[in-house]
Image: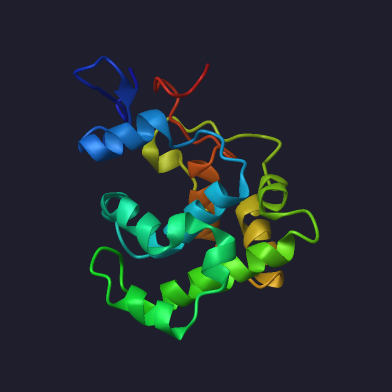
Amino acid sequence: MNESLVIGDDGIIRPPWAASDPLLRDYYDREWGRPVRDEQGLFERLSLEAFQSGLSWVTILRKRENFRAAFDGFDPEIVAAYNDADRERLMADAGIVRNRRKIDATITNAQATLDLRADEGLADLIWSYQPEVQPVPRTADEVPTTSPESKALAKALRKRGFVFVGPTTMFALMEAVGIVNTHLVGSTARPE
């Protein structure tokens, strides 16, 4: 077996990052790398990836339900209409990551998401950057942190008014929503 993988008590083969914490294990097994194609689902994940920047993903997962409550289920129409009182409410909410730049980015990105509706929409735009050839990592060291597609997606989103959408953050988004498959060879989640 690939030494970059761990067999859990349940017999499922996972990478070490997804084997140590029950929350990460559940996220990996049920969600990470599975296709998300709806606007609201992608807006939520785009927002959470921005909040994760500089932090561990498990920190965001532990606060995810609080984020959903604080940001009205990540409904872009509601979030786009947030005002200064909403910003202050969010800054006072200990249940989320209280970072003004990231809060402002979420509101800005909600507005940009609505603007995209006149064209292709957020889901079609993001999914248009799916690579023709998927990576085939055997070890965690072989998993890229960016790709030509994530760089192009970041550039396209910035051009359309999005912020906090760098190439590394966009690559993480692409992994999380099933656009790029970086499940390690030999893991239960990676089809042969």
